[in-house]
Length: 139
Image (tube, rainbow, N blue to C red; front, side):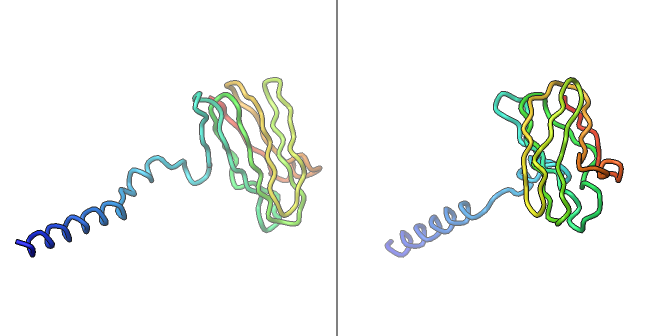
């Protein structure tokens, strides 16, 4: 009888341990945003966080030319690993805001945006003309 009790106790402990270590990764993958955009919406359903990366090799380009966000408070995080100075400016629908210009670091531009289409670009002279621009669609 004692052996049966120890066996049941061992099986129960293994089952609890296995369930604690396991997980359903498929559900997590379905909830992740696309690889080209990192975004999280606020509890009120608006806004979000977008990560935009300047080319680390110094080319005049961003990793994305199309961004989307929900209307509300939106933060664009600019990552610039190169020694070339970059920033991000957003224009449209009465908005014109620019981030700090940085090299080898990150900066954030926080905005409150209504639904519509905006343009984003690097406002360092010559960079927009070199290709550092895109469209931000706010839904």
